[in-house]
Image (cartoon, rainbow, N blue to C red; front, side):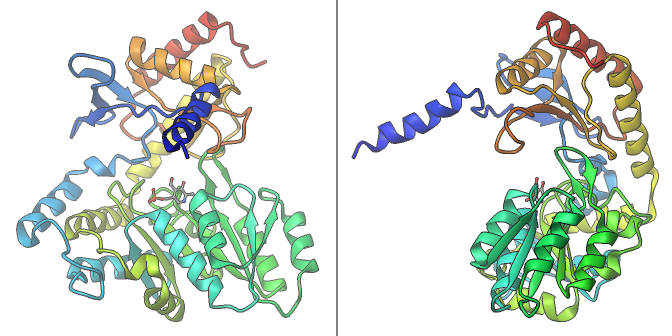
Length: 404
Ligand code: PLP
C-alpha cells in the first residue's frame, strides 16, 4: 500500500478542481478592526481590510469583552482544568448558561466547545434517545448538523431548502406514530436567506414533531436583545431546541443549546461530545458573558451592521456586480467558478489590500462559487467604495459578465 501516493493524489484532486484551500496569515488590529496585518506572500506584515470575518459585530474587539477576559485570566488563570463533570464547571460557565437560557426564553442552556460540537452532540444524542426517530433535515443544513444526524443512526429525510410543501409531503408520508425532529437553520450563511420558522413550527405542531433551530448566523444580530430570528419573529417559545455560537456575532468562541430543562439535562448526561472534553476556558466564557450581556442591552451594533450591509448591496448593485439576493447582513457576490473566485480573491488581497476568502464546493454547490462579504459596524462607506471600485476593475480585467 502506497499511503503517501494516496494522500498526494487526494490533494492533487483539489488543486485540479481549483479548490485547494490556502489559509491567509493575518493578525487583526485590536481596536481598529476591520484593519489587520497580512503576512501572506510578503516579507513583513502589510495593512489590509478584512471583509469576510464572522466576528459580525466586532464584539471580539469590544473593550468590555477584552476587559472581562483580562480580569478572568488574572483571577482564575488560563484553562478550566477539566471536563464540566470533573473540576471544569466554573462559575463563569454557570452564569453564561443562565444568561443564554434567558436570552432565548428557555429553562436551561448548555455550553459546548464550539457551535459545531453543539450541533453534532445534541442532534445525535436527542435523536438516538427516541426509538425509530425520523429526522427531517433542510437540504442546506450545515455540515455539523449533518454529522449529528448521521451519528444518531436515525432515518433522515431531506426536504428541499426552505420548501414547506416538500417538508409537509415528507411529514405526511411518515409513520404517524414515529418520533419526528425537524432540523433547520434561521439564517443560511452562504446565501443570506431566512427560514420560514413560524410555518415550520405550524407543520411541527400538525405532525407532532420536535424542532431544532440553528441560529448560529443570527444570534446577537437579530431580535431586540440579540436572541436571533426566532426572537425577532416572536417564535422562540415554539421551538424545542435553539442552538447558537459564541464565536461569530458574540466575537469569542464556543457553542450552546437552549431548551427545556429535561432536554438540556439529557444532552448534559448522555452526549459524548459534551461529557468527554475539557470545558471552555473561563477566559473565553467570561468574554462571551460580557458580549451576550452587552448585546442584550445595546442595539447600536445591530443597527450599524444592517446599515453597512444595505449600503454595500446598493454599491455592488449600482456597479452591476452580481450581488446575490440576500435578505440579511450577508452579501454574497456570485462568481460561478472556483478558479476565478480564487483569482479575484488573490488580486483583491495582493493589489488592493482587501481580504475576502473565496467560497467553494462543498461549502456551496459547484457552479455557485462566490465571494462572501460580511460588512459590519466598523466598515466605513469609504472602505466600501474602495472595495466596489477594486471589484469593478477586476471584473473588467478578467472580462467577467456584469449583472443586467
Ligand atoms: N452552524 C452553522 C450554520 C455554521 O455556519 C457554523 C460555522 O460556520 C456552525 C454551526 C459551527 O459553529 P462554530 O464555528 O461555533 O463551530
